Length: 414
Ligand code: HEM
Image 1 (cartoon, protein in one colour):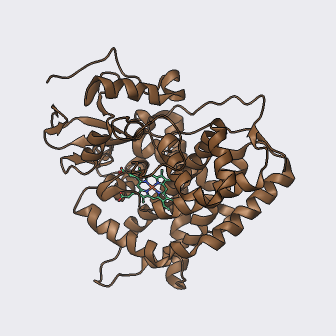
Image 2: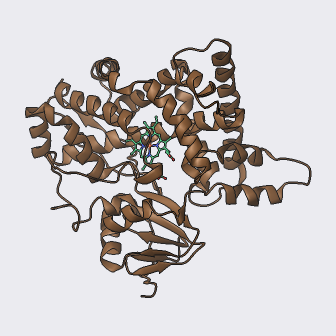
Image 3: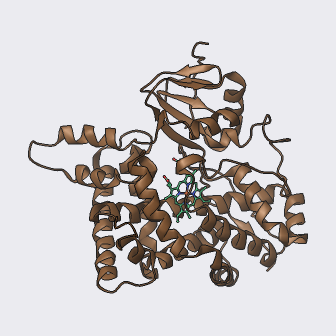
């Protein structure tokens, strides 16, 4: 079957930004893979195809190396620009590497995660959630993103890594800058904004290097100390790999958990019967978290490149092409999820792909789930009469990958 072209697919249009699910529904109905002229990319949106693609060896995650090669070609011979230096560090992010490099990096990271014993962190996370909600209630603030969803993941990952709490606010700026430089945020951003982002990232690396030096001088129980130490078979992260890993952990766990929590609360507010059910049966919190991740998760699209001809459904995507795997499309596929567009916090089974699949499946999923369970359950319990503010205007940040609300103004009777 030949390539199917719709009029064209624009995942950054205002309509797609507010309601990507309708766009992906059209794509699902059209073909297993649809070519977008605008994005110069294939888009795959059916559950079975997305799931198969996520475990296909012919789809590469390596998308920083080509940007690095282009950047290097622009440098004066014998010199290294700031962009080259930064990209050279970011290229060892496991999320943008393929086996065998990925296998090694993932193993080293997994060891450090395991040492944190996340399953035992529930009580601690709850005490942070309580403090955040105490502040929210007493402050009279309205934006649930900034004052409720935002502080938790930053505080927890900062603690796990041994980063002082007072430095948390710098994470968000660094996160944005990393997205801009590593992935060009939808195109290769240039000019003043790009130069500023590079400066910010170099500052972040210098900052992280200070933490690494301190952890080496006096190792503690934190993740930086664990990642800096050699593992059983003697392997260890080289200095640049270590900086890269720390930047990735800050970046990957921060914005995603904030957005997933905020999207989840909004989904409950828009489905009052489900909110009432969760209030009545707080034990449903773990299932409710899976359902909010499915119905409006934090990541809409993952990007891959084909390294060989790849079959998707009854189509073939040629080698060397870019492919968008629409997690948001897969998670709403009625051929896989009964009554897919309805929110059902008792849904079981619920094998959504909000955390990806295969070798790159989210390494922080257990932590993210725990944070979301405690936060969402406590928001429901402690904020009776929770509703959207009358003047709330719900809108999202235009982004290919992230499903991010701009703000979530609420009122409550607490
Ligand atoms: C609700 C919150 C989160 C969501 C929706 C999410 C989603 C994802 C997804 C979809 C992937 C797969 C990427 C790919 O295949 O290209 C991924 C990978 C990853 N996530 Fe998460 N994530 C979340 C929270 C976290 C947290 C809390 C951390 C760390 C503290 C984290 C660290 C990572 C890392 C390091 C990877 C790369 C794994 C690899 O390449 O092997 N994530 N995440």
